[in-house]
Length: 298
Ligand code: HMG
Ligand code: MG
Image (cartoon, rainbow, N blue to C red; front, side):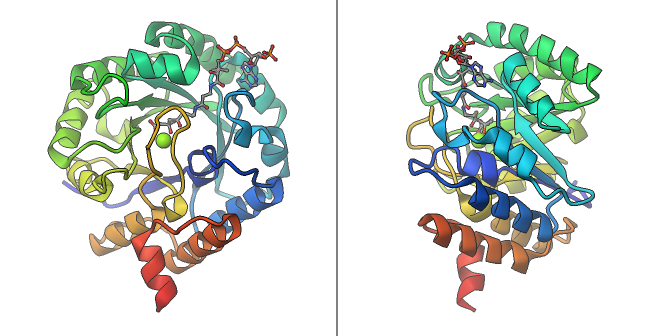
């Protein structure tokens, strides 16, 4: 059955911008985050404490995390792949972080330079330190519906890595179709496999729209009871270590779909769409939200 309410996790400032080749100034990122908050988004992934050599666009993570105009009731989170990243994030007063693993060995190597098993070993002390600091940790699993290097990925492998993250203490596991190759039946089967080990309410869908399937896939997993959806305003984004991957499903499109299904989000769609128009104009990108484009033309 469909959930009554869905929590949107806005990943635009991180997943959406991390792959931009031209530098985006910190002030623009901060304004984006603030506008998203003003539109009623309750959870914003604001930055990524990764190596600036690997992802130059996220090099200003400290300035972003400390420059935020915090609004009440909003969680501002950051990616932290290791202890070094976590310590830096804690210094900046982060209240929630995420570790990111993969269901594919090859992708794990390309993205974080270690095997899946090594990544889990690396995450354990991150979770321990975060617990001490009273900071919640979200866990990502990439390539849940396919890998740019290995092709098909078995749902059992996704379930195994997800369970490892959950058992380690991640309060929620976000399932990433990193390259957007999934289709609804595959998405449904993957969710069924993972939810045998982890309660449905602890899972999130993180779908990219490379093949135009993200909304269909979301519909399929919402029907299964998924109630947390990651999305990116204006469909911004792409992963630097997954060639050709386009952005996440657009937040505006997700909210429009959910509104139509009578599922609450607490988000002001018009304000969100205006934010999508503004950021795409500011950074010179096409708006990949069909809803955003339609509303702007009204
Ligand atoms: P490594 O080279 O194996 O790490 O990288 P290392 O420990 O050997 O350190 C090498 C250098 O990096 C050292 O600097 C460290 O200090 C530095 P040097 O001595 O050479 O000057 N370093 C760091 N600097 C800043 N912050 C840190 C940090 N750690 C080490 N936290 C590492 C390992 C994980 C750091 C690297 O591979 C990396 O940064 N990867 C980032 C990959 C990334 O950000 N990918 C995109 C996000 S994931 C994604 O988009 C998927 C998702 O959206 C879900 C989906 O769609 O599927 C989440
Ligand atoms: Mg992603």
